[in-house]
Image (tube, helix red, strand yellow):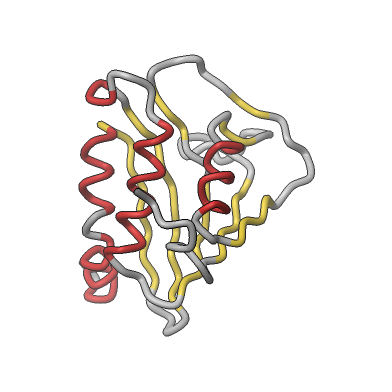
Length: 142
């Protein structure tokens, strides 16, 4: 269960556009629920446009908002919390769901990581559980 303050202090900026189409005018239709889960977990969420048009492709695929996260530390705990939010947004059967994600993470120490993914949702959740190692790889130039 996601703690009500697990993302306390995390600042999230949600940009208009789709992970696969950054030029789209609007937000993915998952944005309201995604924002709600982030806020419930303690994150400070900012949508960068007052225009709230939602884009839906009406499929088993889930397009998540293009987002940038400002955090104290890039950690596996942060990735696990975001993975749990993804799981809550997936339609059944989850095993057949595909997600599209384009997220950036920036820690207060300057460390940055990017998670851009298009594929099976269950694999995305597994990868997010290892977010800290993704950030370390980004530092090493991998």
